[in-house]
Image (cartoon, rainbow, N blue to C red; front, side, top):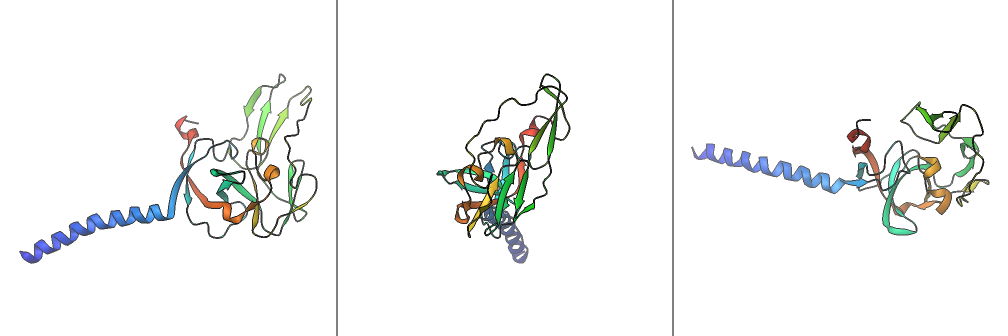
Length: 204
């Protein structure tokens, strides 16, 4: 009887300890971050919740990282790593050049009718620059310079220990084109999955 009671007590203790240990391990390794902007749309929408690592580890091109905004370290943002330390990056029209070689990127296309209104979304998912295809008429009458200066017209050498970040929503992303390359110690984690998405909630 005593042996049976001890075994039962041991099983109960394990049933308590194992979940607690699992939760503690999860909290130690991961955290949930909310996307504060649409800079990563349509990959990650504003207010989407993403699961990210607390330990950065090695960083590769294409990784979506969480980082402290250089001009206000109290704020964190999500963007994609495009350029690595020591590489030369250049932006020419729709292309990103790494060491002089165009970087292959997927594109999202949106069709417009004659009045300029959205006609049809051809592809809603993907990464890279978004292009507007016009059926007819004058497409764009003015272009506005938002102040991008890093690696746009001339090749930009990314310093050692720094990374060049771009948002997937290339036309609406305040990224390394505006504030320069990002120091590695400003990166606080890597996104591993979308935890909760606004697109799923809306049934899209």
